[in-house]
Image 1 (tube, rainbow, N blue to C red):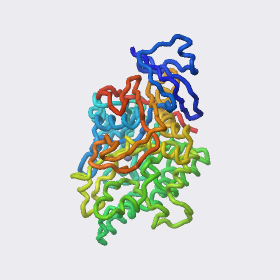
Image 2: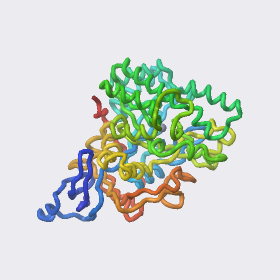
Image 3: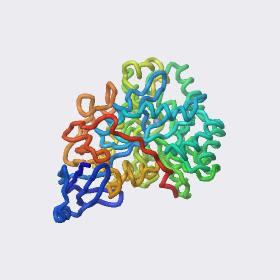
Image 4: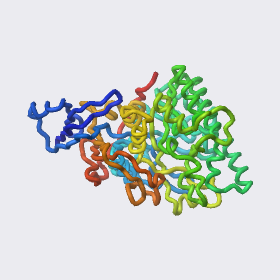
Length: 482
Ligand SMILES: [Zn+2]
């Protein structure tokens, strides 16, 4: 098996940074050496990577992606092949994608379908959460089965999208009770979809059809209310681990912070789009261009939510960055759910509610959150923690994934803080979309070299991996509980 020695780099973990050499033997990290120690001991390697003046970090883990998801009359435009290749370009060596079961479908068959889509296609490793869109006796039994046998230990429910993925409070409580019994985690899309649908119909009746109304009909109090309701139900279900996905609003985050203050197993993630983008600069662009940024929860107004009644004082983005620093938000994921403008987003011309919800991002999360380090919003160590280590611990993959330590998989990113990354459809863009939601962003840092289980997949601005290298990761229970 090939041996690779990464020398003179600064290895970063959630607890610190240190110049140290890393030896990868075959697929795993074999040893780490203080400067000069490897040479003194006569350690040899087939390949040496000089990481002088660079950071050496664990491969990124994106725990929220939707490859090939059927939605809104079309399919998310990245396959597992194209999506995991783009992930590699972004320094992501593991994705956790959302397998799908809808009302009337069988959960175990839904998972089998996701294995068929991904098997033999992936450039980097992958795991699955299971969406349960139809909670009934059969799917509850399947949740326990998947947790105990299939390495799928987290289940996503929706308080939004009535008639598509929606679960009512009784169904949510039953799924939470089942998860509490078998140790699984409940992931929640927390928006009050019943109320949102009323606002959407009223807006359309008034002739308000442009993309910006997607945001204006999903005001943040309806995310906050649903977040709080999910937290209350998780309490009733016996403090079942609850993980709120893609949090976009300061008023929703307050409920998570309060629950955590009370020692509850309540966690949340946010996504780069909520940390950087504003309604004014995206959805509200003239004409139909705003459709590029239609996702749910929506990109929100810069300073306030027009429908929000209360005291905020500062915008959602400030709250979210603070939440990342304070560990109210544990993880940054992307909710990568790509759609092209042509033939896909265009389905919603003249009716914002028919625009497929989602945007592409798996390639850019490490870059965009690193820019938060440059801007002083969070520390280098916290970048690694929220993008690499906590995702592994939260979803039962640690210490195989998420850390640079002997015995861990050789998933490693060499990060160059002295280069820049220019994002754009004619610059850096490897996702299968005809536009970039991040067009024109310039990042002070760059993915230099990426190893996936000991194999170099990105070097010298070239993808050198192959489809089928990525393996399915069977996950254990969450290791991040209070
Ligand atoms: Zn999602």
